[in-house]
Image 1 (cartoon, rainbow, N blue to C red):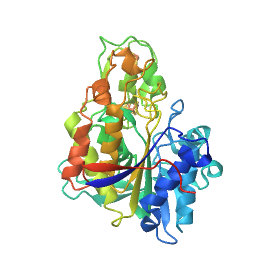
Image 2 (image 1 turned 90 degrees about the vertical axis):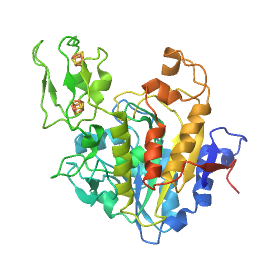
Image 3 (image 1 turned 120 degrees about the vertical axis):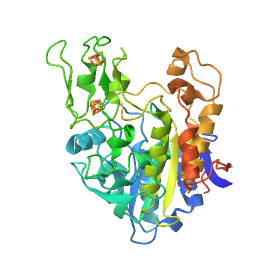
Image 4 (image 1 turned 180 degrees about the horizontal axis):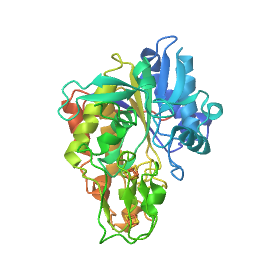
Length: 378
Ligand code: SF4
Ligand code: SF4
């Protein structure tokens, strides 16, 4: 049974030591960050930087706490994410969302380069679906990593946790030879979105929302997709309210592919060199790659830390499942008022699938116990 450290989001006393940033300091100290980081190690602080409009990501104040803790442990931290839109534009979005060298206390870089092509081929041991992935070079070459994850919903696996952050966010974005890349993982059949003319209302949303400009609608009745440009990210599909777009997204394939990719990314690190920090705060129904962020579906729960990505994700999911769905949220829109499998019900998915595949692949355990941290020791 794996230990997962947990600090709840409530401030039980009015002193700094009872605040969530202070509790994060305590969590990192109790988790033994200094055992993960050797003096002089470059340490990737892996983070999703959000999108223009998706602002419910991990707050910079928490990123800075992690950066400071890594430095105290003797490491050299850098904040890393892989490209999801063209690199320079993504860094501008990151800055607008509050992630800069100044706010985070460390350089903010794109781990696969500003063109998304900077990746290293890694064989997937035991890969049934994915034989080789292109791991973003700055993640691949870093000797240690702290994975900061905003727990939320996701159209693919139902839940976006640490495993998704590693698998999707640890890969380069652009195709190289036969490697599986981030976009390819979204649709292992590797087909772009399909369009149904009869359903299309020509609202133009898909063309506006595509981060790489792959969709062109120049005149009504003419919808064109530039297949070579399309990253298979699924944004357009999620945004089409008329159901005119679909991706050949098999739930099992996606979950299995994610677990296999996560295994490949983690195989580039030595034992004990990765720590996971999940933020079960502002749990919105969709991924942070969408161009908006809906209101949270449950109240803020807190922060979880551990050295097992499966256990940390399982504990995060269990907290969300045990919480009462909030009014004025998508849960309320769907008439979901009782706790239990909330993200699964919102997306019609089985969020536990990826956890089970990851367990099978030896990435961790679903059995855990929570060790609670109420305040920072003074
Ligand atoms: S978002 Fe859907 S309905 Fe709107 S133009 Fe695109 S395919 Fe058509
Ligand atoms: S899946 Fe849709 S939004 Fe994403 S890159 Fe392809 S066309 Fe653009």
